[in-house]
Image (cartoon, rainbow, N blue to C red; front, side, top):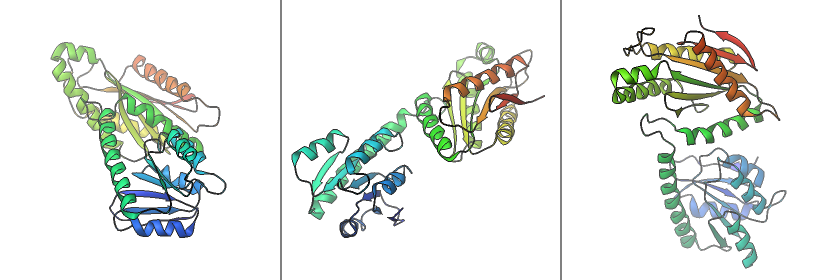
Length: 314
């Protein structure tokens, strides 16, 4: 991997060009206004782009091993990179190349030699558009009631984290938890009180699941979903026990003959995903562990390791 970074609190731009002369020249034009990372080949450029920290990508078309058109296709195929605007900066001036680049997802096409002021103007226009897009995208990914991720965000997150766990060969855990006898609570105290419970449960769970490798979202109704990457089965089980206990410790009164306080039941599974494994298989297994927790008395965590139940509270 051949990349040169400059860590400054500015908009982050990824520049991919195999020419040292062109790369250094463009970096010199841009580095007073942007945090520029220069990559000398498409493979390292792709790897850097997948970090998700860049607001814009500048890249050439003519590169060894992987050309710009192939790289564009790969960037568009991945959730982590498909929303990053890509500007082509190339010596290829034929309209057919410009048409292909724009068709594949590039937002602009600039031919060399570049005019610095025009290059910056076009970059700024795309950055403003990207900021607006990301703002509305984030709003669309948040559950309005609880403030945590919604079902749409979850659909993106599990795909990204599942692929990462498979690539690295590390454990992936998914669990589903829901509020015990929530309908009875709603019927007794009303929906506004129920909304407060949902918000408090979400806030408590998210206070534990705050690492970049963690995820928690509202799955629907009183049901939530959480994902952990890198934790083995037993540590995931113990971690969710802590969350379950923290929710019980909120001591929100429940109008149920069985439960004094609001509690949750949790079902989860840990797997090291391999090629051919299907995520939905393990999501269904987590759901079956949740069913077991409910059937066994609720307010407990039941956990599976590689498809077999291993731990159950009480």
